[in-house]
Image 1: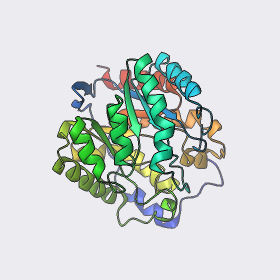
Image 2 (image 1 turned 90 degrees about the vertical axis):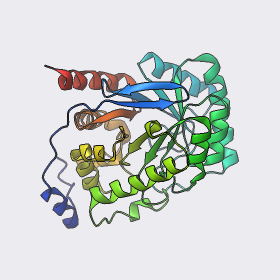
Image 3 (image 1 turned 60 degrees about the vertical axis):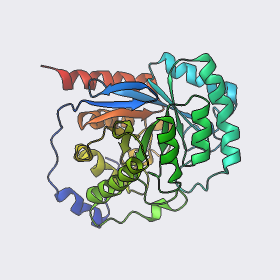
Image 4 (image 1 turned 120 degrees about the horizontal axis):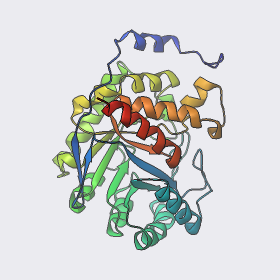
Amino acid sequence: MNPGYKPRPEDKALNQVEPISPASRCIKNFIFRDRKLVLGQRTYIMGILNVTPDSFYDGGRHFNPEDALRQAERMIDEGADIIDIGGESTRPGSTGVSEEEELRRVIPVIREFTKRFDLTLSIDTTKAKVAEEALEEGVSIVNDISGLRFDPGIAEVAAKYGAGLVLMHTPSRPRDMQNKTVYSSLIDDVMNSLRRSIELAEDKGVHPESILIDPGFGFGKTAEQNLVLLKHLSRFLDLDKPILIGTSRKSFIGRVLGHDLPEDRLEGTAATIAIGIMNSASVVRVHDVLYMRRVAEITDAVINAN
């Protein structure tokens, strides 16, 4: 472990909780726009496509629509099951963009993607208007990193289109979320927040089998808290929803390994993906589709071994 990495004193109490043994596979349906995935038999890979100039890892690489489409094709060839397109960086400290700018970035790519490829497409947004226009263009899933906190209207939009909905935990907006890392009980607090998000979504008409939950790795958590979330991930099965995780190249991996650059976090990401799958993640959101597909296949084989 990086000798410079030290848990905060208040984080040490988190490890006094007894670890949860890896759960057996929990089979659940995920329904969206007249489609159904049976989750739990194998891990599904969600490839990240950031159409932004400033995302923490690949910002600017796919900002041009044709570059974005080439990257989408590459991820499809590498085995992605879902492509998650985002037009607004949510890295720590980011301030966001307007609806108009976000739409300008993502809609041309979505429109062309649906012409060229037959693959499930997700929109990573916290804005109901962006979600609705993306769904009009053929997107099937809305990935809301705010868990309906920033724009509750996303729930009504998802319900209207029969879309899948990913509800993630974050304590606040990206610009100040890393100042909001104090919890009375980390796992319980995150679970209770997600429970409220689920209730709001279902109250607005989202089908119970159209919801995935994401504990929000890297969003308002210290490095140690992210490790504890991963260690106890199967606790989130108590919410009766399939689990999605997004640990790919996150800073907590670099903190443990002593690697400041996201480019140096591939192996650490692989470890978190394997552990997450062992602890009941059904969908993994990743930058490196080919490598994480291989990690998932081996981990699935271990879980399913007789």
